[in-house]
Length: 405
Image (cartoon, rainbow, N blue to C red; front, side):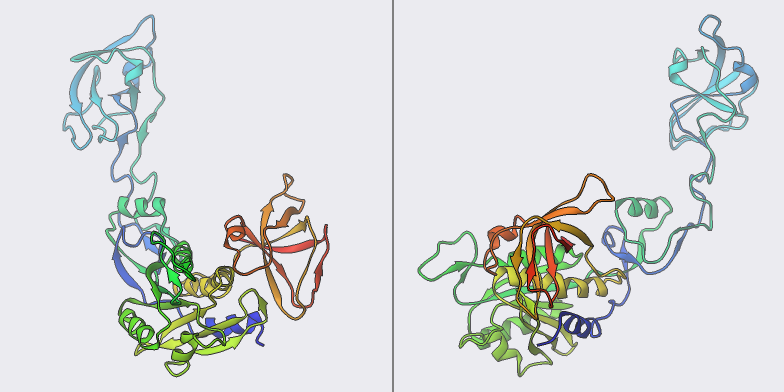
């Protein structure tokens, strides 16, 4: 059997970051920037007011107070998006709204709350400091400044910044398009009644969600019957929209395991045993004219989930240009003991609770049994206990490695 590291290394050697694309700003959301992005102008682009109020000269309002307010003539009314050519001279002011450009001669903004909000004269009861409530040109971002380095993930704040500096298109690593299908004549999608011998198709839904959580664009094809021609036709039809294909089921040694039967002679897919539990039977290779990577995962839900976490998720992150491919691993104290198969790395569904003191290890407890069909306990897990190949027993109270999901 191959080790987990050998199988994963072989996968990562055959997948590479997708070629950059220039996308509309919202279409690029969630992707990684390819290049550094510099501002072509100042932000804000002009001096403007940060408050609704009055643009004033300091000398005119220096003695303003509640008992003896200062009264000034209002010579202009400036809304956001407008401007005024009238300068602020002694004894005058301009009513101004938040975001509006300040007129010449302005030394501070008096908030409307410090006034009687009057027009065409205003009574001012407090004196501002020099420059108070004025946003200066370039205070946020200066022209030529690098605002986002290459490799940055475009979240909502980053999208907002790019829009603010005027970028409507940006070069990014695109999200990989993942086609996911389940195999098995016994599978029925949710929402339809079951007959004797049938089970729900949960894997294609679970893996589609997992691919989206990994940043991919995922297409759920659904389930394909145990028919070689139907499987070949489905995969070939889907290659046009796939950067990656993921199948689940049909990779063991049974008489109706058609994935192994079909793909052994198609493309470069190799079916191997990996020293892990769950998820020992694995297949990986390329298929089609563009050498599209294809993962063939086991059919049991827990095996499929663990296989995705260990092998598919790192590959999808690599294709997006991400450097950190690994889930966070922490040490935690195991609250119950269990046995582990010799020579295999075991991934045990578990519930992790961090310690209140960050310097102390958290606690982790297995959930459910060891059966790879137990999706009920999988849904309760927020972590996987990772037991090394040379360990055959985990004692209660011992420290273990925990992969946080």
